[in-house]
Structure formats: structure tokens, C-alpha cells
Image (cartoon, rainbow, N blue to C red):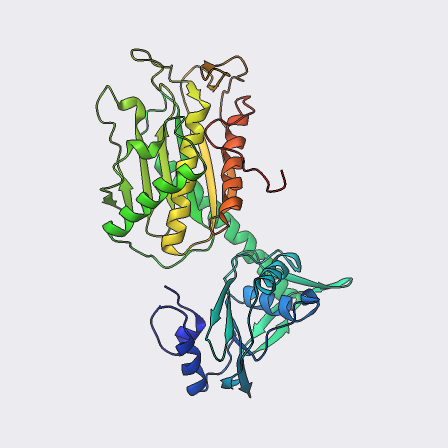
Length: 415
């Protein structure tokens, strides 16, 4: 469901972006605002970076997001009619998206491009709100920060640029504090003095409306995530998804939690907990140390299978992907750590060519440095797969391990 500036000015609730909405806007003579811009024609593909497109996108991003609609004629800023834009080809759309990334600094990601209408075709571009402002565009040796001023585009003055940078830094600090608070909450009560735990938390970079999904909706998120994880990881390890009750999530404080199914002494080594928060945040806590080594033997609490880390990260990132799709989020700040407070240094174990556990290349770890990153949960499958691989690689590399064994690398098409 979308709630665009067009829905807002027409006084409509969230819903699909349709051709009928454009007709209604023309009928009511809707005027341009700081988050709504009418254009009669699509810009040409050739030399698109030299047109007003980068300025229009950057101005919207610098003003909290908005929508640019191509195919609407206007007079005195008010919509007066429809004009067929012709077909928006795949090449045209790809070039448009590329300009938002290459001709604007910092880039503007996450554009939504909607093709509307059959006879009078139109294109609506939804520019997301951004926490990375000011977005600058360059003209030769000069740069500027465009901003919407009601229905017009103006240029930020020095003090406006200064204030926008300050807001960016304040937002980053707030986001870091929120992530750290989530991490501390997730590790609370785990027996880290007995065995190592992986704790992974993610928080949307741009907060959305508190969605409050139903139990059925939460169940679908967990179900979808359990499918996604196997598109880039194997079953060659212990997956948290296999050890939580994700078909019957339990309510918590503004969240749904999939509790651990490992509740007795014989299965406790597989303990895991996963949560989806109403604000789009995601948390995973999974026991890594002390996994079963054989039918009657277990690793020590400080011994961690590298592929166990990989499987936990695969499940965690899949849950981000599914949650983002269901609750309409895109970029996530993430923090992944391994917590152990016992006396022995941690050891991350790999496997040899025969698939047997091997610790000859492990580097003893007195502490694990949390890996922080930003994931684009709305990225194409191949790009997201690459982000997952790199996150897991950063984690196992800390223990002296080079290669991943549960998450497959993505092969470039040219290879």
C-alpha cells in the first residue's frame, strides 16, 4: 500500500497508485506543492544527467521526499489535463535510476517508478525521504543543493546547508544509539559466560509508521524469510529458523517473537530467538558455542563453527528482506556481534576438504568486534546476495577463516 503526495492532496487513505488518481487530480485542478511536481513530458534519454532530472530528484530528497509525475499539463501550477508520455522503455528507466545514483552526491536510492494509463500514458516517480542530505548536484566546477520551495525549486543558502549537515549527523548518532540499545536488549539474559552467542539486530534507516502487523502477517514474514535464506545458503550448518516456532509467533512489546523450540537439555545447544518489531526492526539471538559435535559429544562453549555463523547471518538477512517487503522499508542499519564472557578465547572453526571440523587456521579471539553495515533490503536479488556474503565474510574473517561454506558466492555473469 502506498501513501503518496497524490493520496494526501486528494484526501485519500493509503492505496495503490492508479491512473484514476491522476484523472481525479486533473478534475480537481490539484496544484503543485513542495512534494508534488507536474511535468508534461518525459525527459530525453540522451544526456539525461545534463537535464533538470538530477536537480528535481535531489530537491525532492532534500525536502523530505515527494513525487514527480510526467504526463500532466499544468497552468499556474495547477493540473489542467493529461498528455501521453509515450512508452517508458526499460533502457529509459535504467538510465533514469542511474542518474539518481551517479549525478547526485550522496546518491538517491530507492526510486519507485510507476507506469500508469494505456491511452494517455503517464509516469510517476516517487522519491523517498532521505537521512543523507544535503544531496548535491554538480555543474562543471560548481555544486549546489536544490530544495523545493512550495511549487518551485530553489537553492539552499549556506546556513541551510549547514543545518542539513547537522541534521544528518544527529540522525546518524540517533540511529547508532537505537541500534546499540536494540543489541543490548537482545543479548540480555543470554548465558554468555557459558557459551558464545550470535546477536544480530537491524533497524530501518528511515523510520516509518508503526505498522502493528497481525499474527497472520507476522507468520507470513517468518515463512517468507525461511524460504529466502535457502536461495543463497545451504543447509550445511545450524539454521536458527529450524529452531524457532516461526509458525506461531508470540506477541511482545511492539513486536512478534518466534521463541526457541530448544527447551530441554538435549536440544538446548540449538537455542535461538527471532523477532520482528512493529517499526520494522529485526533481531536474532542464536547460541553458537557448545554445538553438538557427534552423537554423544559437544564442542566447548568457546568453540564456534564458522558455518554456524554463516547460517545465522543468512537467516537474519532473509528476515530483514522479508520484513522490508512486508512493511515497506528499504535501507537498514545492522550490527552483528558474537558475545562470550568466559575465560577461554573464542575459536572459529572451519571444515576441511572432507567436510570435517578443522581448527588449524583459527585465530584465538579475546573479543569479537561487532560488524556494522548498511543493507539495502530493496536491492535486486543478486545485489542483496552479495551484501549477505560480504557481511558473513567480515564475521568469519575475524577468526582467521578465509572461505565461507554455507553461503555461496555470487558468480558474475561474465565469469
